[in-house]
Image (cartoon, rainbow, N blue to C red; front, side, top):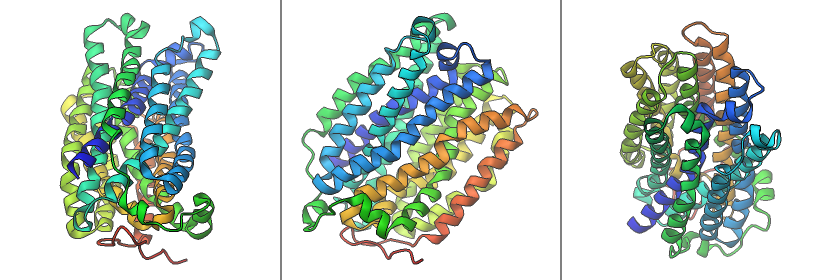
Length: 424
C-alpha cells in the first residue's frame, strides 16, 4: 500500500503541477504576452478563459480514459494520461508570443491547454481507483487521500518555481523567458512519473469483474445519470474555492491592490502547505465518522467563510490574506480529503472509473472553469472589498451543500459492491 500510495501521490503531483503552472502563468503574465491588443482587464479575462478550457476538456478526458479504465484496467490510464499532460505542458513553454506569430499564438495556447485538461481528466480516476481498490475497507479514505495530497505538492512545485524565478529575475526577464522554464521542467517530471508507475500492479477489484461494461458511458447515463449530476454539483464548491484562492486572488491582488507577486505567492503557498498536511488527518476522520458528514461540514464552513475571506484579501496585508486563504482551504480539504474514497464507493465497479472520473471533473467545469473569469468580472465592478465575489462563492457552496445532502453515506461499503443507489 505504501508503494502504491507513493506512486499515486507522485503521479497526481506531477500532473497537477502541469495544470497549476498554467493557472499561475495565466494570472501573472499570459494576458500581456498573448493578448496585447486587449485592455489589462480584458487580457486577464482572456487568459483566464484559456485557463477554463482545461476544465472543459477534463470531463471529455474522464470519458475517454474512463472507458479505458473500465474496459482494460486502471493501470494503462495512468501511463497514457501522464504522457499526454506532460508533453502538452512542455509544448506550452515553447509557444511563441503574439508579437512573433500573431493570432496563432493564443490559438496554440488554447489547443495545448485543451490537451492538458484531457490528460488530467483521466489521471485522477486512474490514480484514485488503483489506490482505493487495493486498500482495506476500514482505511480506504486514509490510503485514498495520498493521491489527494498530490495536488498540494504539485501546486507548491509550480508556484515555488515561479516564486524562485520571480525573485531571481527582473520583470522584463521573467516576461521574456522566465515564465517558460517551469513548463519545460514538466518534461523531466513526466519521465520521473513514468518510472515510478512502470511496475504498479493492476487493481484486484478490476480483475474480479467478470462482465465488463461494453460502453461504460452509455450505461452510466442510463442507470446513474442522477448520481453523476449530484456528484458534479457537490464537488463544484471545492473547485470554486481552490481556484478563487490560488488563481483569481493572484491576479486581483497584484493588479488591483498593488501587492507584489512574491508576497501573494508566499501567502497562498503557506496556506496550501497546511492544507496538504491536514489531508490525511481529515481522511482518518472520514474513516471513523463517515464521508458524508465531513463533506457537509466542509460545505457549510465554505458558505460561512467566503465573505470574511474576500474582506481579509482586500486588506492587501500578508497576515490577514494568509488567514483568509487558510480558512477557505481548511473548508476545502475537509471535503476533498474523503472524496477519493467516497466517489468510488458510490459507483458500481463495472462503471466506476468512468463514473468517478466524470463526476469529479464535472465539478471542475461547474466550479473551476468559470470562477476566475466570473470573479474577475465581479471584482471590477466592486469597491475596495469585492463582496460580489463572496456572494458568488457562497452561492456555489450552498448549491454543493444541497447536492451532498441528497447523496447517501457509503462507509464502510466494500469496494466490490456499489453503494445504495440514489432514489429518484
